[in-house]
Length: 387
Image (cartoon, rainbow, N blue to C red; front, top):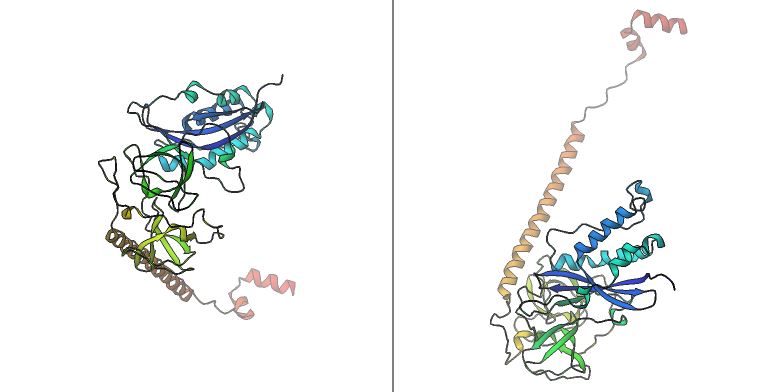
């Protein structure tokens, strides 16, 4: 019987856990030589400690003797505090690290140190439960069409549970009807405001505006506004129906300054700000995307009537006046920076011109008689001897 070894390691995403304190763990699907697949969870600090010990066991391949002999991939050291953003941004690095690690010669990729690290541990099967009953929050890694899709990988995936705050009746076969108080598991959060959910044996799309976390959100799920703006192009005409929405034609360029989970983003066009459906936006420079999974625009949060939240603290909403004020403030700062750069450039040009003008003119070459007149007697005798 052949010795066990790891065929493949797939990073699925990460979990936010709350016991014994808030921390993040990465989820790996490990495929072994007998084609069995096991789900394991590892903290980044554990992964880095494993990496350091691996380098100690193989000093030549780690480049400790000669840097040019290094074959073990690099891995950045952990930060003092890992938040949601840094944990998310590190996923690509970890996926590349695991791929490079398993492509090393067998003496490294199949050594006991590597095998023991990826073996299932008791905490992988029975993680410590939170004292306040909070369930872990799962964030799946986004994959593109060139990579293996997460849905193709077998194994238990823990999904985040949400509660419906109002009744929603489906309008198409691909949607899912929910009643206020229903609990659903979210499989995918689409930026266009439609979330793919499952409830018992039913699956379908539900507007994200109708859902709220079961646990009181101690940190906002939505990104903070980015008043620098991200350039997007409108893919369809839209005529605003509410006073805070913008009417924009297809093909226009706007700046997205706040991406909201209900699929209605705050955009800036010139000096005007307003809501616009994310479904009709495409990032500038990206290739056209195929048709949307659902044709209807999702409802906005503020349009939901009879909404009943289980949380005493309501979601924080930014007013349009705040968006306008901060946009004007940012645009003014940006213009000041542009003007300062232009002014500095003009000053540098003037300074270069002044330097060019201040350079002394090249004196005329003296005549042969003048040179001989200035020479010493010894030099004159030498010249006469040559002649």
